[in-house]
Length: 446
Image (cartoon, rainbow, N blue to C red; front, side, top):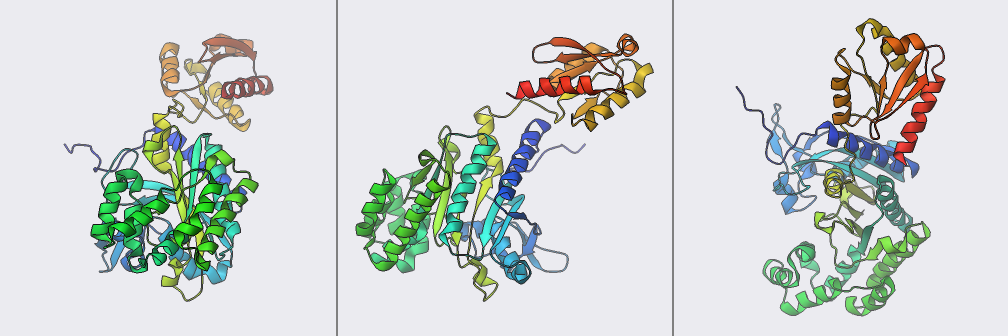
């Protein structure tokens, strides 16, 4: 016998998790579409040259790669942004700009698994291609806020920075050539602390202790947005490019407030750098106030040069990605997931085989009225069927035996309270029963 098992870093999704997972995707689709983002899809496999050298040395190591049957070097996508850059370069003449897309699909990274982090996971991405205007940056913050709110979160923080502010500081410190290495070190500040980051900068990025201290002085700016904006010019050197980068960050902050993002949910955090090399401007990280240890559950930023690897046409872009599986892990920890293993709220008990067709007709009428339901497949004892209903999270059970069918009634049992109500029902006039069910199901959701 072959032992049934999954690969390390991969997981199966049972209905109790897959049902809310699909609901999250449906919620995300609704939010993305409400802002005008259109769906696309791209292949799982790309030519390896499309993927490598776009994220970082670390992501290059994490790519699942192999030679296919045609002798081509191919890789499995590690995110949805690099394939988007290739997609846009290939199809933008047909699509036009600005082009707004969302993409919900699995990606693969051969990294060390940890809580809420797997080697195969789904990303929910949305991006705007073809504009450098700050309006697209502001809208990205607004979408993140709407997305998390629609999913059911209230206490979260969208941290915003501008990579260009960091870049100008590094130029001021004569560290422009070491910028990638410095920013990768800085991205670890929240994980390993100031001293270790400073030591790593000196060792890996070849900076002096004084230069590392200046970078960390910037990263450690904290407090109200206005006080941070006031301090930035002096720290960054105050040249024209630095001032433009700071003004951009101000515009994103004030614009997001105007777009309806509550002030308590947006934070200017000049310590975040994002580890991927392709970010060039505004960057985002979103954390849950009640579970900060899970890390960022929605991240992204502006990447104005990525598509330049595939086309001479300028295709600046900005977007963010919701880490669906990390968010699900957080919701499990916070007990936000409903305890249900069925997407149907109503179970129709089937315990009188002589009335099989009546059960089927009842089921069809409910479905026509928009009430998802399941007919138990075997005419077993009612107690067995009610136990099944409880264990799978059904909210209502409908009970009708020979007596009920003869009297033209159905028992409606609310499983949470164990209360039963007798409701008139016949196939020709199902409205009384469907109205009763709609009312019960709506009350349970409140």
